[in-house]
Length: 221
Image 1 (tube, rainbow, N blue to C red):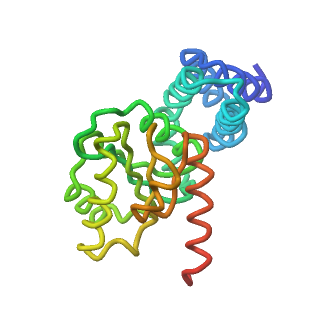
Image 2: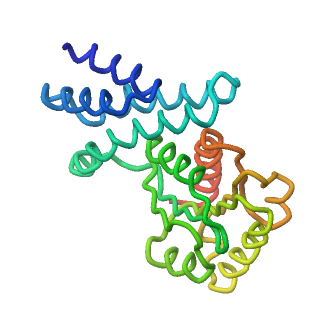
């Protein structure tokens, strides 16, 4: 296969979520000495962006997004160490977790894959993350953005508890705070004092980039 065919194949197979074929094509590209960032930026990321666009249009639904995301994740596992070696700059660092009392992680995991595909370094704290664990992780990793995920209306008040914990630790102004999850709304995000809200994985990537650009424009380098 030519490099062009490999890129087209990666795009097409990621779109339909054919994980084994995506991995095969990734390996084939690398064996042809193709640059890992070429595979990522010229095929995988555009494909995932198309998945997001189709989701927004109502042509794709969550299952299609998930299988495409998983196909991309398999390729990313292979490419991640190679990208690190080549020193590809990340857009920023995104710390993510499902709040205390909540064990739902499908949406969060999909968001993580989309963020990573868009060039973020993602640190996932998993589920049932207590406010003090978020605080400790922010101090350790110094992320640009922190994401709180909640799937249950009963756990949504943890957003406020987490933000209060960040304020108490003197960290609130050092990070962009985003919230999301099935029952969450923009109004609720505003009420708890979050910087941003996104309804789905595709929107999260756009919003995170916009909020970071905004923040960096204000803060002198």
